[in-house]
Image 1 (cartoon, rainbow, N blue to C red):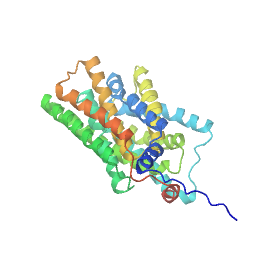
Image 2 (image 1 turned 90 degrees about the vertical axis):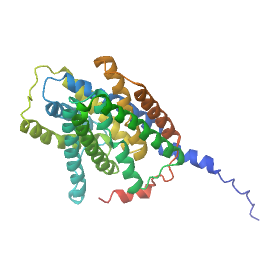
Image 3 (image 1 turned 180 degrees about the vertical axis):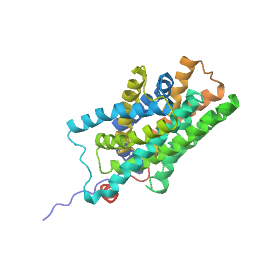
Image 4 (image 1 turned 90 degrees about the horizontal axis):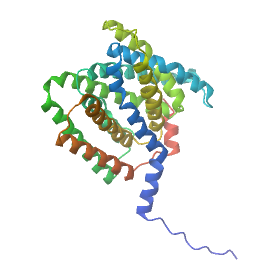
Length: 324
């Protein structure tokens, strides 16, 4: 006679939410996206230090990094093989993603020299709110209540920093608008690369998209009549190493593992670090609204890490994403 087994105890809703949070936000990926943004926050400082034009510095950031990324990808277990004949959509994603990233860097580097360090980094990462919106509407990665509070806090904190920016010096407006345009293009790049990352490992994905950015940036710099060839290479080498290889490399890795909301809000680490750099290096003053904005952003990052999404991507969902 078969022995009856006691029924299993169903997990409580709270434990389910916690397990979803752990699955959706891996600690290593979260640490990677934070470190990526810390590294990227030093980009504006290095752009100002470079003795080339702003777009030309973006060109060298990409050009110096491309061979290194290609070599790492070739030596790694997942080599950057070219997409097959049936994957024309993947080629298109990589090409358009590289062009969008080139436009992001070009406009951002011009804006960096026309506004403050904090403003350039804050507005250049306006993808903070655009990329999560894509997640809500397209990827259906809806936020939990805690993450919703985090998003509101981040918006209020960013609003304080933006409002303070214009009040301090309206002459920064043109630079701020250029950086906002860069942030929009950055969000487009994120959206395209999130699709690529559902198919391709991080290093080959970054290597291909980086190579797709080289020619547009060179053409952009030449058309603007910028000085392209530098006398001193140190700032440009550090820009390629810190911003493109380390910063963007960690970002692309995290992009395939974290929700758009977590990635988007983590971008606000950059203006926090850039604010400190601007204060220490350039004496850019901080007022109470700036400090309050930074505190709100920091609180939002803590909350978004603790919150759990209502929908976590399943393996069959990723299979659907492979059909480009």
